[in-house]
Length: 233
Ligand SMILES: *Cc1c(COP(=O)(O)O)cnc(C)c1O
Image 1: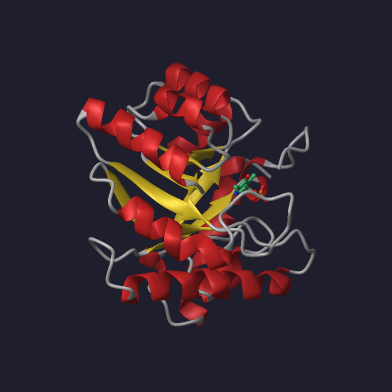
Image 2: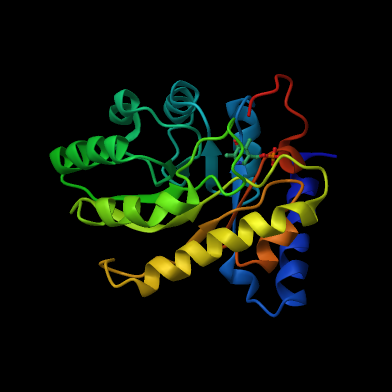
């Protein structure tokens, strides 16, 4: 199946998942994750009206951003971000999903101030306690959110997580529920300048469960573009 057919099917699935749990289908946004795929594939998704594109690697992202040079595309950074790479994306990135330490937030603040812009970010939480994963530990999330919330050029929009690497979608539910609880607690904590609304959770194998648990952004790669050749987490 081609990208257009895949997208149609996913959009239908998102719609159905929302209706089945009483949510407005407009409240869930699809991020097309294009890592390892070329600019031509991204163009196909764009032609289908998908403008939110997610990438994991800074160099791959900047190359594609340069080649495509399409102002309609909203670029999402979803991979592990090192402080020394912030400068390459900070001018045009739409949303950074993967901030998990104060150092990288300080670098984003510094660069954003120089550009006189505000950067939207999510804090990544390691909800499944797998050591191979990045993300702040659930017990440290509130402290990190407090520290980041004082940076004037950073807008904290919400939280992101990757479900556990387990075969059944249902096995991701506790992780998604935990992320939602951390968001609710932080919003009730009184230290944020504005409430956080976004929950970036759910991938190809578990996005319907994520939607049931409150996802506002699902990050889908394989179901749109097909299997990736190289295995890159
Ligand atoms: C690769 C990746 C995705 C997409 O995964 P699929 O299983 O291909 O849908 C989503 N989020 C992150 C952080 C990723 O690295």
